[in-house]
Amino acid sequence: MVVAKTQAAVAEKRFGKQPQLQLSEVEAVWLACAIDGEGTIGVYRQKRKDGRAQYKYNPIIHLYNTNFDFIAHAKRLVGGCGYVCTDKHPNKRGYKTLYTLRLSNRAVAVVIEQLTPHLIIKKQQAEVVKRFCSAVASASLQWGQDHDHYEALYWECRALNKRGTTS
Image (cartoon, rainbow, N blue to C red; front, side):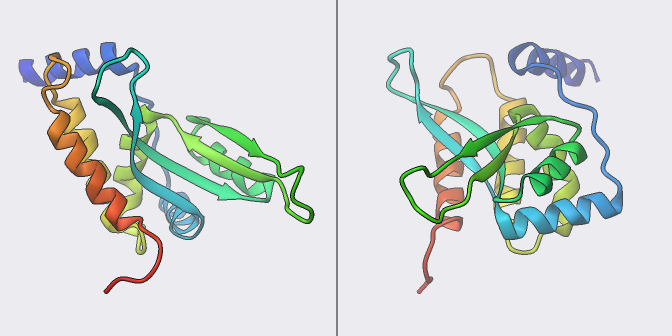
């Protein structure tokens, strides 16, 4: 019990306070359906800005739509734990503005737990992200020690999210 409290305190210090969020059954089903059809679940990898050779990994849940009210409703459901990006296409005639809800890293773990039972298309990606969030929460403070595990989860999600046909 003491170890669990210590890990939670370390995680909060490293990543910030985890949001308290409880979706109703209807809200969880709506959000799962929206993400299944118009979203992305995965592990994001980016080069570190501090010059280190290794990458930085984050869990992601993004929801895309050209209807702002749809995205605003989803943001309300997750208690505002995210931000909306706007992608305008001024050089592409006939393209609508695309709105993207990007959940905060800390909200992903909470939301994914509640959505996974209702996901169909992206259920496997959700399971990988759950494993990633669990690995990060229990990781040691030694940076880079879990790099290989995170890299493997990144590639597993990337393979699941690959476009095109499977053979």
